[in-house]
Image 1 (tube, helix red, strand yellow):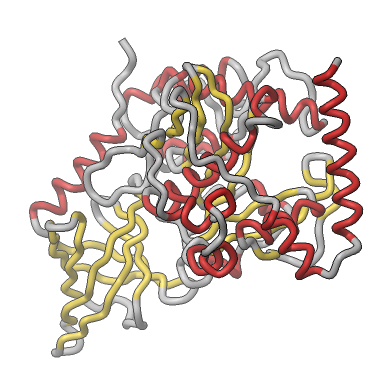
Image 2 (cartoon, rainbow, N blue to C red):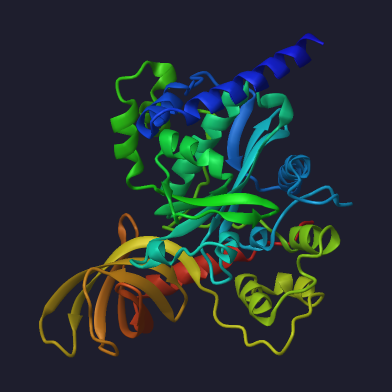
Length: 422
C-alpha cells in the first residue's frame, strides 16, 4: 500500500510540475528541465550495455517493448508477445540493450537510413538532413522494465542514452538522430539533449497518438552539452557524463576495418522472428524482397527466402556494405593535373562505391583514388563517377584496384555469411 501511495504522489507531483512549467517563459522552462537531471555515477555491477546479438537478448527486448507499447495503447494484443518491425530485419539496424543478470531491463533501437526508408517518413520528411550526404538514423523502440523506471530509472536511462550516443558516433557512422515523440515531450528532449524540431506541425495519428518530429545533430552535441552543463555538480554534469566518463559496463563491438554495421541475424533467427512469430515477411513488396535478398545473399539464407513470396520477378544486385572512411582523388586522365579532392566513402561493393566529395567533378572521368580502409592500410583504385545526387554525392564504378581492395571486400562478404547454428 505504501508503494502505491508513493507512486500516486509522484504522479500528482509530476502533473503539478508540468502545469507549472507550462506557465513559464520558454527559456526558463528549458533551464528548469536541465536542473532536474540527476545522474548516477555508480552503475550496479550486474548491469551491462551492449548490442543485442543472441536469440534470448533479442526476444527479451522485443517482449519488453511489446509490454510497454501494449500498456500505452500503441499496439493490439498479439499471440507472439513481441513487437518488432521490418526494419529490425536489416543488418544496418542495431538493437541496444541493458542486461541485468541475464535479464533485459532496457532497450532502444537505432535504424540507420536505408533504401526501404524509415518508419517516420510516412509522416515526416527527412530530405533536409540528407542533402549533404549526412547519415541519418531513427531512434525508436525505447523501453525500460517497469521495475526499473522510478527509483532506479536513471541508473538505466542515462547510461542507455549515453551508450546510444557513443555507439552512434563511434561505431554506427551517424550524423543525425531523428525521433517521433509525444509533442509535450519535445521541450524535455530540446532542453536536456539539444534536439531541434524537424517540422513545425505535429501529426495527430502516429501509431494512434499525436507525435512531433525532432532531430539531434550528433556532431553539435558536444558544444551544446558543454554550454549547458559544464561546471555543474557531478550529478548534473551531463557533458562530462556523456563524453568523458568511463563506463566499464559498456560492451562495444570489436571490428576490423572501418565498417559500421553489426549484423546478428542468422538464417534461424530471421526465420524465428519474421516468419514463425510475426507476419512481417508475409506481404513484402517486390522492392522490399529484393533489398532484403541483397542484404542476405549468402547461400545459407536461401532456405529462408524460398519461404517468402514477392510480387513480380526479382533481379538481385551486388550487396553494398555501409562503411565510413576517408579518401582522396589524386588525378584525372581528363585533367592532366593533381586534383587532391577529399572524399568520405559511405558504402562499397566489389565493383563500386558511393562517396561524398569536397567539390564537384565531371561525370565519366577516369580518376586515381586512394582510400584509408584502416588506420595504416591504403587501397588504390581507378574509378569513374557514373551519377550524382544531392550535394556532391557520387556513385563510382571501379575500373581497377589494388589487391588489398578485393581482400577487403571479401572480408566484408565473409562477415556477412553467418554460419548456421549447429
